[in-house]
Length: 364
Image (cartoon, rainbow, N blue to C red; front, side, top):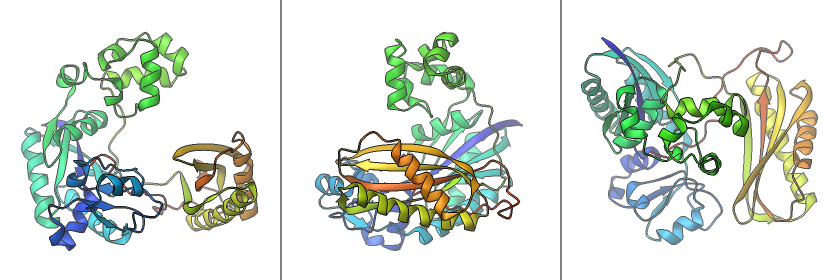
């Protein structure tokens, strides 16, 4: 039997869960985000396919979504319900006896051995639907990168194969931003080098890429373009690299005093999560979202590993000081505490609470 990687992605997950408990919403545009009030500040966590057809997408401000889709049903995020639905899906995937690596609420990789990968993928789809009433799409590849990209081609409720023998024919003519891991900014930088397609990136001079993106990132981009990925599917417990808190303000923070006061509050809340996790923080990252919707981050290393609230708050202040002069009002603040790589004897060893799982479904 041959070895493959499957990427399983639940279709419009949060919206689909909501429709299951509210069948009268089937066929209507459904938008999940914030506390469900589109007149308040917040972002779309998931939009149903009906809402997407009207231009609503994940990460969009709720107020913009309301303008584009005024007849949509807006619902609040209900994390406990989604976590339970996700658990049932992941248990179903494990029932096939393969290694399953969870990647969030709505997606997972599976390492499989089979002579009929597409038939197996259809069996997985059917069993997930029978047990949960949720549909998923499945991408098949020789590695995670290929499988992840294949999933998008199979949506919704489809199966698509993108293995090494098919890679160049399918991906080669596409823009570099079609690659998992390359965003708009990187694609623009590549375009400035005369690299516009995946094939061109695969054939690019490695020294030129290293000079433009760094000695590690440059060659890695070329490997992405060739469809290469050596990361393994692992069912080891996921250990978060950090914990974070953020808050969207219904009234903008307009003064330095207001920003610092709210920053200190978020830093102390984040410290509570650091202590619950049982590790020490070594770096603090501050996130600012400025009016109208400009998001920036800055980080600062802590003098020593710590779970002390005053030290983490001081680190947040240091990160804030690294921003250029803040000339626009602040609509969102976030504080993230990042952990050291090894257990700390002073803080009681490793923990692995899923503290910073975010609402998924940016693509599904």
